[in-house]
Length: 304
Image (cartoon, rainbow, N blue to C red; front, side):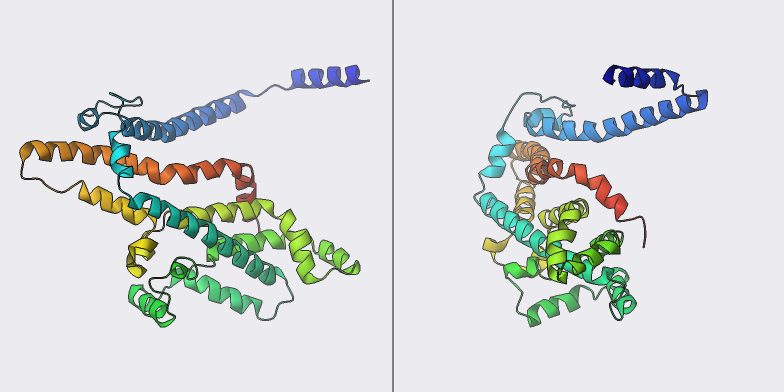
């Protein structure tokens, strides 16, 4: 029986012939995909190669996709700054704690707004979407942070952006696509709303939760401007602030021509090293949720 099934599949495959138009279409798609892939991979390879190259080779433009004069001078200059470890620790804390708060608040708000029997649901959604188009501005936000005693605290990097409206809309749409019959069946079995949310709905929503987790985590990892505005204690600075300080310090003009030339070479090298140092940790996080990424985004964007 299995032999017959295999022969049927093989005969079916042999009968499938692509038309000339389809062959041309797939050829064009493959070429475009290859070009886009190369355009993405090449700069990344160049950055990594330059970060491990000799400063003179980097300044002379000799590095392409392979290190020239292998050197760790750039990374030694970066990690010789003791503040880097403090920045890493703070950024990891802001990313982990902030993402947990973001995902929890977004999921709960999205579930409440996905229920069709919620009073004033359209008005509430309008208030959320209104914030996407109009913001209070830098000075009013600073005054609000001070009024609630959030300035120069870790909470100022977590609480103000607890819910991203775009992620809320994606999650809400995902929840609304789950059949209501599932909730009715759970209620018949005596399931409460809270138990339905935590035991049934969330396990079915791994795709969209993975997507918004990535969005929030990347946002927290790259957070710079909020820290620049609201923090003045160096013990609370995220990694991005310290990396900026290192880059600016290496760009100081020295009156000695030889020393100035060496500083210029080091400055060119540090640009690549800082990109690697700030990007690699969050890039390592992506493969773990890549399988959910496309599915979560597409399902969350089908219906309004």
